[in-house]
Length: 283
Image (cartoon, rainbow, N blue to C red; front, side, top):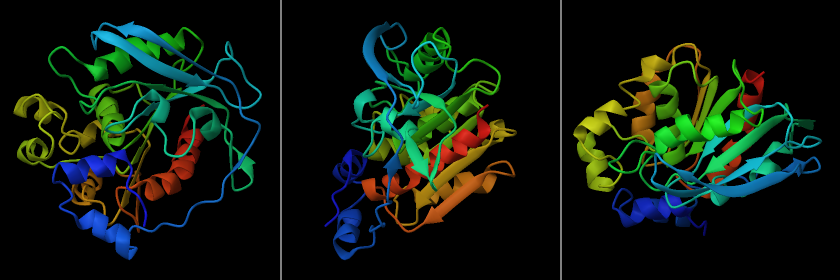
């Protein structure tokens, strides 16, 4: 039996998955072949904390560097947003940020890039009273990294995320045109209405107006000119919302619909091609 990740368990517990996903895991509908992985010598990483005025609390972060690079080097930057129930230490599935940057894909290394992860809480990366993780990313985290030579304009910032983080990556790119050079969203947690979102997770959006402001389907036109890759398993409960999203994404976007659920095996499968996609679009 494949065990669901934190995001999948949260969905089951809140009724978004009325037992179906667990049944799918038992009968094999969620089975995805584990990708073979090879790595370069892993580069350095640094973790720490800073006080976020936007979130009104101390937050943890990790900055990872690619092989043969170190702090002080000027590099493009991937901002990796975690899923529900995770944090900066567990933003990726099955890898650390430094390992992700050291992947050899198809026998070749990735273009050298840095990656940053941060504690965003469980508020779906959108503004809430007293806690604004989106402002933290845009106004605090990215400048924090740019002062270290990471993600300098132009064409130097990629957004990536899984589940709640996939939604967040899309939402940040839409809300701040010109900030992000490319987006890779894995199994993005996309709801099609505030009623649907509120019934599944009352803490996801502070109000109906907050949902409208952060509706990644309604605001998909803001991504015109931004390379976007969206991957979703056809048995993912969010898949209907993702289908609606991709139907209105600007032309040229990359959509990957394949076997899989809202579980770690699908996330693991889609991380390497998502990183490859971002590496092609960051200079």
